[in-house]
Amino acid sequence: MLPRDELLKGSGRPEELAQLIGLAEQALRTWEPCWSGFVGAELQEEAQQRLGALSELHLHADGGWSQAERCRLLLRRAELSEEPGATAPSAALSGLVVSGNFLFDPAEPEDVRQGLLKAGLESGELGDIWMRGDRGAQAVISSEAAPRCDGLEAQVRSVGVLLQVVTLEQLQWPASRVPRQVSSVEASLRLDAVASAGLGMSRSRMAELIRSGAVRVNWQVITTPSRELNRGDRVRLDGRGEVEILEIQPTKRDRWRLVMQRR
Image (cartoon, rainbow, N blue to C red; front, side):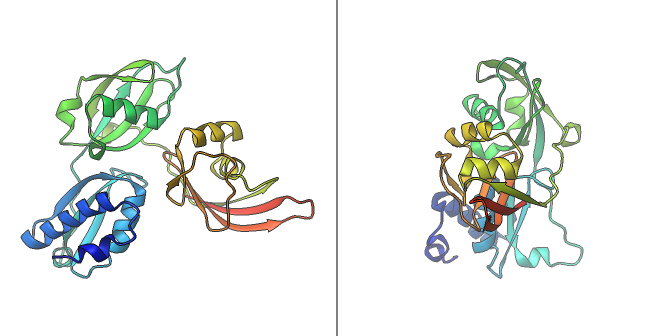
């Protein structure tokens, strides 16, 4: 048995981490690798720090593409991954096309996620979701959920959509994000000002997303656009990546010069 209490101490997501610990114990006991459902970036990071540090356990993440934010985790004995010629198997994943006319009611990936959840999918069955202009969205789902999705009708905001299951190869993937440094001079250290500069969108749109609960600072949902940021803070917007504040320097004109790392 794993030291469950020690592994859970101080966890930001104890219930979800406890489920992963259960899978890890099963993998160690049976010598059979175990796949989790899709988990978010915060839980992935915590699992790698806590479970990945155990010498007897190996973790591998697969979300369908190299920059996936939501992934399924493979938990297996370290000895199995160290065998000659051993490679990590791919997760059982499928693609999903969400077709609808969003010309008059634009949606965000989170809107699509909520629509799919209301249509009967589980959170652990849904990977990354990205918009395809006003024509709808595409997503990665678990292959176990695929038979229930194909041909299903759902509602996203005010738009009726049709779901079609496809292979991963048939998806039109989002543009890959290249990590880069971003410099900006801002009048304040407000979340809406800094995040809009770091993630490349208008300040008004960023303020809307913050109020809707779509933005996290150091993994905590923040709904106040005026929240001030500090050096080392990490701002994440699902579907747009993350920006970390590396440097903050005052200027002679009482403004702030920032250096940020965007991923």
